[in-house]
Image 1 (cartoon, rainbow, N blue to C red):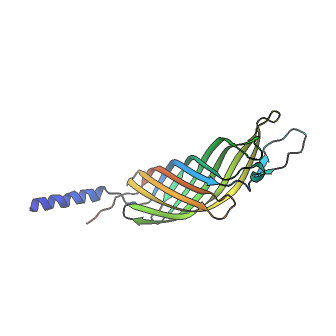
Image 2: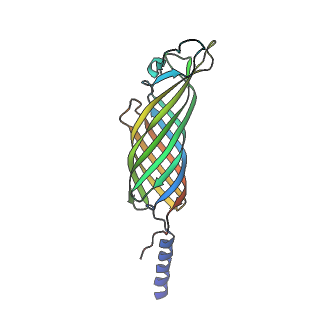
Length: 213
């Protein structure tokens, strides 16, 4: 019986020695998938270039083009830094949608959009999982092409700000791998963007690992 108890304690100690501190400081490269919905109706699309010797055509709003609420899937990538009680991330979400056309002006086709952002906030450990809650701000860049018999390929672009609240969870099975999921909502700007992302992060976090006694 004594040998069995000693073996059990040794096994628990070995498991504790190989555990990972989910709050340990670390830096990671993050990549994953993102779903987003937003309304570009208030964005102002301006031509990137116009005919030589002529005044550039006026800008057009997304509402004038007939672009309403959009729901898109894309790819997210960035760099994350985790301190013990807070996190900072810098990244971009990339979307491409070559088939979406404006309802009022079908000659205008939305091509792609990029959301560049910075987020930061506190971290709270709940068991093996770390909960995050913070703010995310950045800019959304959107590109539109005018398709027609005489204006093939003329491009318009627009940019608008994003200010969102994010909540999420992280799980770090090893010191070099971190998995996370997060959801965010923009309550401030006209885009009203809602995002949901899942990602894997690869990098380094500080040791030694947690030890229980």
